[in-house]
Amino acid sequence: MSQGKVHLAVSDGIAAIVFDRPEARNAMTWVMYDELAAICQALRQRDDIRAATLRGAGGQAFVAGTDIEQFLAFESGDDGIRYEATIDERVQLLESLPFPTVAVIDGYAIGGGLAMAAACDFRVATPGATFGVPIARTLGNCLSSANTARVVAGFGASRAKRMLLLAETIGAVEARDCGFVHDVVEPDALDGKVAALCQRLAGNAPLTIKAAKETIRRLTVDGLPRNDDLVRECYGSRDFRIGIEAFLAKQRPGWTGR
Image (cartoon, rainbow, N blue to C red; front, side, top):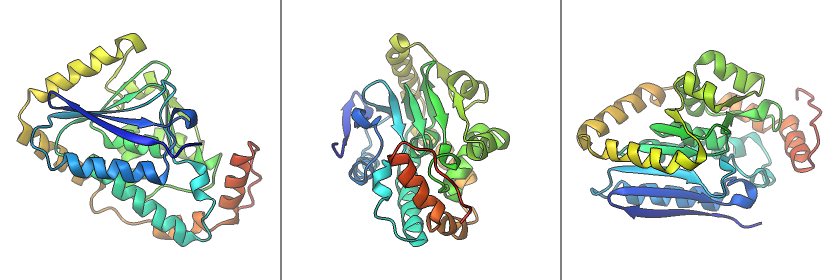
């Protein structure tokens, strides 16, 4: 299976970022995370960008999390600390872009994909889109404080507990009703809705948008207490190894609590 690509195109001041690994529902590899970081760093240096869209290729997923095979080399909880720090860095690069970002979600936005969608300013989804972090059922790892804060900010604490403790996924209509999704539209109307939203954003004052975005980001994720002790415990556990092996074997994990 390929390592995937993250593509960038710019037209009339609107950047289009595409996660291109449809055979794996756009699950992210290290290569793709690095390409996303490079794209964000390049875009923040430009003064001609007024908005950006992010979407997954293939019509089945935005991003279905991190490719689980990336975890096979993990040997201790410290690997989990480094991984979560890397993801935090990549997501923050996206979140701190000085112009509005719109996640276009047709299918799954799961795990790391949900974190990236939550880091965007707006989310437009098709009726079949789903959002979740099912790691309590699948892998037995955990989120960083920053990504947990993004889920809570987007869905509210009660829904966040459903997603993180019960491993429930949230549908597009419920995600819209709680304010996480800006609009739910049929697939054939998706491009037009996104283009209209981007044009509206592009017509507003860039410095006002930058100030509002950054202030909200600081209120949401800056100054959070770290949860490295909990990350180390989860990623260093026998259960995490059991979760990886069961996921790749398409079996149900038998948790031990150790």
